[in-house]
Length: 287
Image 1 (tube, helix red, strand yellow):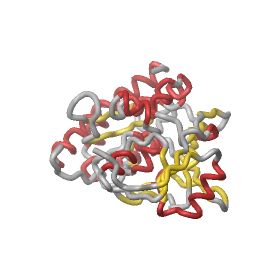
Image 2 (cartoon, helix red, strand yellow; image 1 turned 45 degrees about the vertical axis):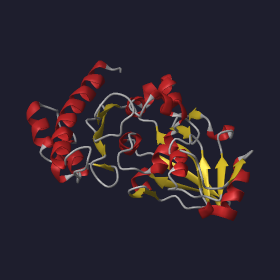
Image 3 (tube, helix red, strand yellow; image 1 turned 90 degrees about the horizontal axis):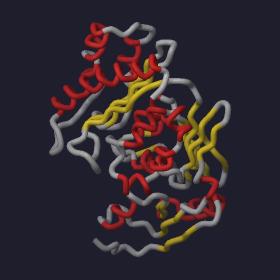
Image 4 (spheres, helix red, strand yellow; image 1 turned 120 degrees about the vertical axis):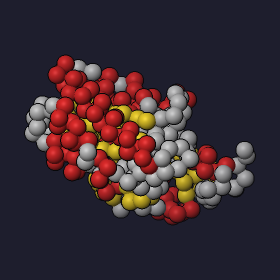
């Protein structure tokens, strides 16, 4: 399918040039990083921008930085780069696990983590990992930077808190030793959207965090479930009781891909399986 809409393609040389263009044209502009969503939207005429700004060459955005306190993931970093990073595997195991389950190898080679959250589709695989890690989104316009909590980022299906004159610089995640897993329900191997997804975070202080995707209008933490689990030693009885909370935490729909009832059923199964895996990882001390 050809792209029929005319637009001006601009490959910017630095962040400041990008911000100036956004300040001038904002709602008439689309950012091109991985392009896995944007190209489809252009072909299907979902997006009809006057300007497409290519930021792939901005080195300041194409990096993963580790400090004593934070991990920074730039907006140009792809899922393949996350998968290939031993430090991401060690320090952000849930995000590393989720990255391996995004679409296909070809898509992961192009698609960026930031692009994934900017798409804000309910089924995005990266959201549970970022939610359980209390990630912060760094955005900037010509007037300066601001930080948006991942918990405030998704404001509706395919809608975020990002303003039209802002550029996402990257994501900051606090370094905290933890273990966990991302469980995804898909229909087949390869490129597929999640019918349901759950991220589970545990640490040695019996702190449990759980987040979902694809079973509500926006990805979210499961606070009632978390509160029930806090400081508990996990047993089969506790897991069974906790799983009964899940239907009250999610609001799945029935569509061509799955029924709401099946999604609820599988979320319970994935929660039980994922929690036991996460605890086993913690007790084993490694992935």
